[in-house]
Structures are given as structure tokens and as C-alpha cells.
Amino acid sequence: MGLTRSIRKAGLALVFFSLLVLAKNADPAFAGWHRLSIEPIVSPRGSGWESAGTFNPAVVFHRGKFVMLYRAQDHAGTSRLGYAESSDGIHFVRRPEPVVWPETEYEKDGGVEDPRLVKIGSTYYLTYTGYNKKDAQLCLATSKDLIHWKRKGVILPAYQGNWNVGWTKSGAIIPEKINGKYWMYWLGTSADKTDQMGLAFSSDLLHWTEASDRPVLPRRPGMFDSRVVEPGPPPMVTPRDIVVIYNGADDQLVYRTGIAVFDRHDPRKLISRTDQPVFAPEKEWEITGQVPNVVFVEGAVVQRGRYFFYYGAGDKHVGVVEAAIVR
Image 1 (cartoon, rainbow, N blue to C red):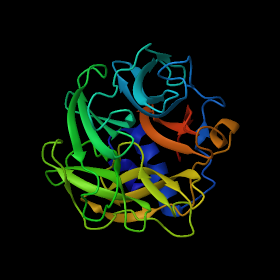
Image 2: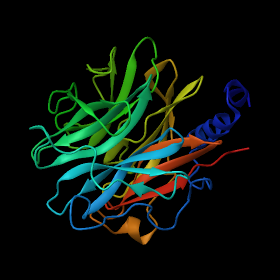
Image 3: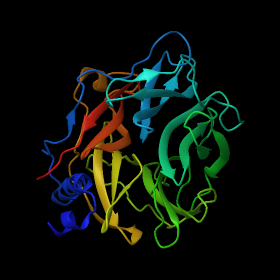
């Protein structure tokens, strides 16, 4: 209970405590992860820019509403970012046009994919994958209102990492400085062609340097994360720990959710991780889709002592689950 008492806000304390207990006990039957809707909350529509898939969302609470940026894909395979708002976190109203679309050479034809959002000061920082149907690279944009975005370019180029020999993706920025630096977990491809989690640091959020010569959260052969270990939403910081929700895929590319805990004073130092997934594909619309057997958690919002986790399902829909509160 010492950890719970040390967190300033009671609601956050309960949620963080539940996540830490789960990560350390590696309990696959953690009953708190339950769907708030048995149907998708966002699905493809029309014949245009969001007709093939609407998935992998970033979500923040902004000016009294849940705001979602979601990846929207047309039938040509080009992705853009759509914008939706909700008062309850479940029922969303979408804008008719995307707010981010392909503009640069590193986004041409493939588009802008898989957003993560974090607010630092008065600015929102959006990490996303720029894909030109040849290379995928981790990119950054900034905004004050979540609608108008300024591109800052590629922040971790493909093929140039300490251990990464392929694409770069999935930048999950820790929302506060640690040891005078900003830190970001991200996805790279190792020499064995598996995708694993790396770490980078920055003094200004624009220029990033790798923090290690190997993955900080490696794959585990024979387990639910044997093939892919990919950051989810921005990490959650407690007085003692950094809690990272991540997406793991096995050798059959079934995507499930895991939790890793890193040291609060050293984001490189892994303390624990779940041996079993805490969330997995079950519904028909999670098991089928453009890519079958996928739940991919990418957005997180805490409100009134509850965590809402938003995920892509089957690379086609958006769903929402609520995290447990251990009392």
C-alpha cells in the first residue's frame, strides 16, 4: 500500500497499483480488462479515405472531450489520420475530412499511420509512421488544437540504428523529463528479422538519439511476444516506475497486450513484464479483418479513476476496454 499512498491522486493511484500488481504477478486472468462496447466504436464507412479500415487510434482528453486521431485507410492502401470527439469516451462523432494526410516524399502513396499522442506544456506531440510503400520511418508533428499540424520530419530514420536494420515505428514518448531528458520507446527490426522495442532520448523532443545498443524490451521465444514487441500508448509514470503497455505478437502473428515496468530513474532498466497477455482477440471483428487476430492498444485516457484503453481490431475497427482497479 506504500505505492498507493505515495501517488498524489487517489484515482490514478488505484489504476497504477492495479497495473503494477498485474505486471509483477503476471496474472493472465486479470478480470479488470473488459470491453466497454461489444461492437466497434469506429468502423470503415463510405467509399473514400476511410472506406477500407479505421484502426490504431491515439486518444487524449482535450477541453472536456475525448479526442481520437485514428488511422483511416482507403481501398488503394493509403492511410490518413481522422479526427473524432466524444463526451463519454465510447460514442464518437467524426469529422468528414482527415486532419493529417500524405504530403511528403516519405509519406507518398503509403501515407501516415499509427499515431501516438502526448501533451507536453501547451503542445501536442504526434508520433506516427511515414510510409511511402517502400520504407516506414518514425516521424513527428506538433499542434496546439489537434486539428492543425506542423510536420517536424523523420526523427528516427530507417536502417540507421545501433541494432535496428530495418524500419522504425511506434514512438511512445514519456510525458515528462527523466534525468533532464525526454525519453521514447519505439519499434525497430533486429538482424533476425523480428521486431523489438528500443529506447531513445532527446533534449528538445525534435532530435533523438538511441539510448542503447540492443533492444530494451526484447522478444521472448515461445511466448505471446516471440515475434513482435511494440510500444502502445505513451508510458505512465509513477513515483517509482514507468509502466509501458505494449503489443506483442507470436510466431503466428496473433497480437495481444502485455505490460512492462521500467525503473522510474532509468528508463533502460526493466523491472518486470507479464508472462501472459492481459488482453487478446476474442470478438469476431477482432479475429477477422484486414489482418486477422489483432488487438493493438494505442490510446489511453484516465478519467475519474478509470483507464480507457483504445485499440485497433483486425486492422479494420476501433474498440475500447476499461482497465481494472485493484482495491
